[in-house]
Image 1 (cartoon, rainbow, N blue to C red):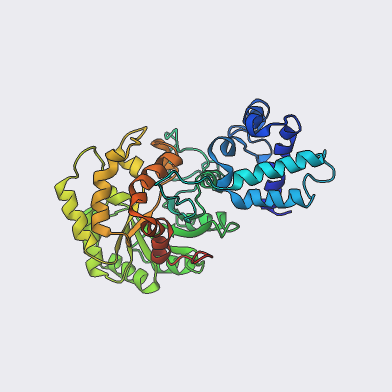
Image 2 (image 1 turned 30 degrees about the vertical axis):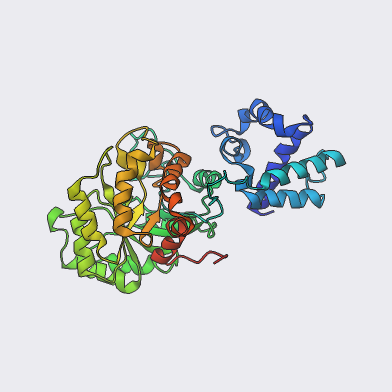
Length: 403
């Protein structure tokens, strides 16, 4: 039985147990699950690797039509429940099918408000790591009470499912070269969800070219992120320029974390290597404060954005607020978003979350809500580009099946 079929069977099994105890599941189902299921199947226990807490509280059924559609199909064919399990009566089966069909229909959008829930979403910025592995991890530190725990595909899949995120680009946060292969191996069996990996390699070293060639044999290895700055102000030597030109020639992309770099550095790289596709992370790494944007920062953004090969990732807003929990009102972030929108336009902005770091500021749903509140009024075409098309073009990701 496939992983998806096994999960479908488990989901149906828990539904059937409680439908048999209630003739009005639509009203009382949630209370029954809370009272009788979550003790063994919440996020803490996950008995049998089965977590009901996430879908119960955060995932409307209409946001996962493929899963529930398969359940309906098997119910209708009499394939579920399995023969060895207690069976539904004909009336109960009909009631469950009707209930699921009603709830797999997406609710109508409020009058005057467009419904964009069908737009595919690629989150281009998450991190995965295993703090329990032998030898540990370089990041995050053990002192980080929010992040220091295993963060693997299982954890993100739950978050992605309940927030309508279908595809993901993983950004490697470890400085260990072999962790590039570790993350490629980790997501190998989920190619439709994990469609790209941004690696981490030591630019400007004799080994760089060999590493890049090796990992690039995997087509999901789309580029690298530049985050460390050895030698400080002397970082940009001829070896670094050699490796950046090699990346451009190889069709690889460059993400840049501005913790150790500046927008002036972005301007310099874009001028010297105009064929290199550059993606500035986390709305340029600005420390966001409530109120008007700093004029000097605005000028620096415009200088960098004048280069057509420079793009901006709309990611890390909660982190850049410097607050925990982060503000959830759009007004706090709007001056910053206005600047990057004006500078980069609809064709060079790319969506990302920076999960799980975003958890320091709030939930994924809260983060996404801020992004959608700002960009949805700009219309479907803008959202299509922000949420998936620009990412596909920048990273060279596969096209959506519907495109």
